[in-house]
Length: 420
Image (cartoon, rainbow, N blue to C red; front, side, top):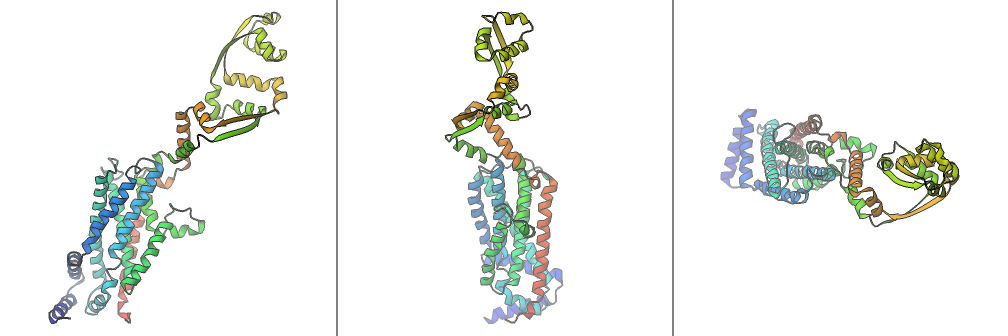
């Protein structure tokens, strides 16, 4: 080491020794800012822009639009924050472990060192958050105007992204304080990222025993905050209808009994047949035509239900009867008919395809029904649009940041016992 550098290092250690904790924070903060400029730590900012650009191009037509797209986009944005935060600080302590040990013996307070790191990393995370959201807007992601906490949704989203990034940053800071060198830290990092992704609760359906592990992940709380802010539950679910549309040409052969059909059509509480039952059946028959269609007893019963004058039974000829009934009334009459009681066990077979059924019921109506049912089935109370749900994401992220910062401080307090 050059003599001038040795003298400069000795002077800095003397300066640290005789300064209080607050002064040491400023000294180390100045050191980190110089490292940002002269040791290329600034490279994390353009990398954040590149990552944000790639993600934004994928999610710009999904975020805040569909239910599944919103959840996927919220998860992607959570991953962006975790990635940025982890790689901000994963090497910052382990790469200068020898320097930290030397300065600690010279009077450096570990709490001052970690606090300076937290301030510096918070500034870095804030810059990355601003860059990420700016790139999102530049690519074309459309944010709703108003948020739950501020007048601008993009600001609310920004708070969530910052908290995710900072929590990930402090987690990586703690790992960096545990690792003896940068190789070890970078080896641990992929396992941490996989743990965050797998146990987020979105990618995979987690077994009951793994729920406590999910409670330890930054990804779970980040996803909760972002999905709630994006009003996940009010977005339409379109994936199921897309799958149904692809099956339009699929042929179907359905076998059923006459009794099954009558029971199905007779159920007034069945929303699927409500409109069908209300269909008007407007046609006229002569008495003779009616008796040819139905047995005499059923014809008389039907005529009695429609005509108050019993003298019409004597004609059984060309007397014309006008029917103005709903299909439901006709079905109910047939269901009680003695003739139909004998026919109930007869089997019928219907061959059609899904497209014909959709066309018969009305594509717009089927689309709406399928979409509403799918949306209701995927409702998640944890993602409801409320400040309580967002706070349920924000507060644990803050707690994780504080716990990891405390653990990093405690870990480095034992750095003098490092036998390297």
